[in-house]
Length: 426
Image (cartoon, rainbow, N blue to C red; front, side, top):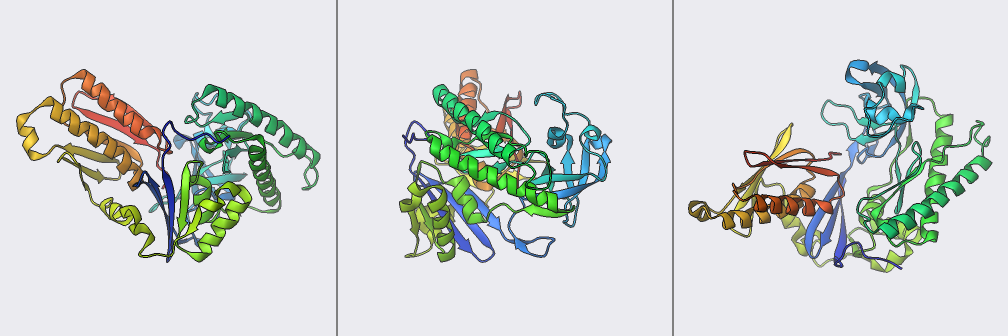
């Protein structure tokens, strides 16, 4: 049976707004904007209007190996060579190096002139080329296929031990099954090695999924990987091998889950794409898919548009009368928590605590909305009581627990600062 994602059933809706040159995707939870993704069409070096390059796979050629930087530059057919760090290249060595240890030297992973399958993990920005990884990941709806790694890893948001065990066992059987399929077809692509089957990362959406659903996902991903391998054998570097799916399909794959109550789309073509994806991959969602025809604009529902324009403002008002100031620089994002003017004068600890706790919840929401990554430093209002500080850090951790982007958080420094990092992709 289907299990819900959290203890309380969240009322979740996904809104997809298609404009000229961009697609905007908003996730609304309990009537409040929770997450926002902008997919902008931009002219890529191939001269085609494409969306973000994230997830695209190229057959690249190693241009330079830089032992001092523990990295290599890889030509992938764009204006600038991509950057491949040793950590993202470690899967290429046969060394059974553990994931926690330092990666082997870059010169053991790649050599100059070598042809290499790489995937974009961070878009090119200003004068920097794309960041690449040799550890390809192919996301499905329930599983992510990782061809260069073995075994089964699990989303940390699947907490129930029995469910983790059930999913691991099913996935191990899938790997055996796919390996058998792949062994049968060697030679078909003119090379005599069977294709690597790889391993899986189990996504949160797989909670409660039955064997048939998981197998369908596994087969689709295996077919895709075989297709990519086949293209690689026929291509010469540098060339593009695979583009990640269009923004609407991507939103259906990554943002829609068991707890999504409805999906609203304001564009006829996008609606058709979403219906086709649903029919193939999640038929149970078809009746939750709706074409939005007004009245008004889609993003006027739930005041999404208002929230988005507010998300561009550095000042975020808090209900308690205080406010946040959020400012990003190249190096880090600073968040300053200010209480309402009258409260600072009284200096009451409980007022500071109340404002800080409210601020912590709002900060988690704003980081997600604004897509802020990298280092974040938060300057909370001063508190003396260690229990209150611990409570504050708990609220922050809780608020970040349903963030799909990996985050880490420090304790509070002697100056009352909390540091955190949030993985940056855009």
